[in-house]
Image (tube, rainbow, N blue to C red; front, side, top):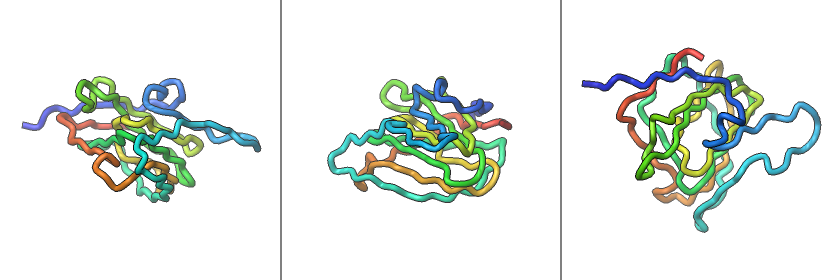
Length: 162
């Protein structure tokens, strides 16, 4: 028998509510430079920066999620280059380093917000909501098993309408 899913309704993404998972970077409204906007973490001397471009097709809500991921030794940043709102689903590490669904949160980010996950933060893959969206992604990788850990959820998440 499939266990009942955990239902989450996304909230608007703000720096304050996201602070225990990483950083929210607000695109500047005026000309200027914003230094030290996020914590870039590389926990392995062998890992090199990977500056990648990703195109994501939109997903419709409600959305069922069965798998999450984390990067135990690296932060991971996503900066939208075009498109619209996107979904951010996170949870803290529980005992033993596995995901703790009690602390799962879902957010809707705007096209003017970038995110940077802290190293070890469990999260869902980047998910566009309205239209195809391109992202710049920054992570430190060395091709080893600790680049990314995937985990099947014991109870799936259903992300309700935002």
